[in-house]
Amino acid sequence: MDRLAGVLGVAGVAAGLGFPVYFGGLDPAYDPLRDFISEMGAAGAPNAPMVNWMAFLPTGLIQIAFALCAWIALPRSGAMTLGIIGWLLFSLGYVAAAVFPCDTGCMGDPGSFSQQMHFALGVPGYLLAPASALMLALAARQWSGGQWISVVALLGAVGGAASLSALAGDFDGNMVGLWQRLLEASVMMPMLAISTYLLVRRPA
Image (cartoon, rainbow, N blue to C red; front, side, top):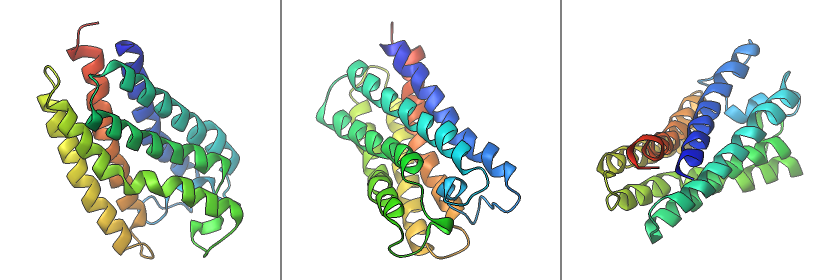
């Protein structure tokens, strides 16, 4: 289970960080600093079906599988379980982005039913991301050889809180894409650290 969880985690991080770069580069009108990641799969986007079903959906499913396997493999505690729940909610956002694409521009209020579901299922994972990383930082302190993971997760929690605050303050601005990517990276940091821990630092 350790190896399976570790492989799934690395794959989930690679997909989550890699597909926005790839698909964003296919659309000359897409600006990664200005535009939400979801805009690549929004209604009317040139590569929307491909982004939704070949990027968002598999990324979400891989990360959900990782979170469940990590919960089984890692030393059990309340803090670890809360952190994993936060990961599950975050990963659910990718699945929601595929099944319920947002409207063009991902802004209109309240927008279509699909956009409302997009935000209803995707926003909780973002809002809880810093707290999830903090829970994992607390949990990792009790793991054998897990002190370095605690530091990485704590940095993710601080970075996530700062990115979330910047995103909320600039929601209608020209840098939302940057803040969203930094927030996503803050989630991926402990995810990759724990994947490495399961693959390398713990005995099989």
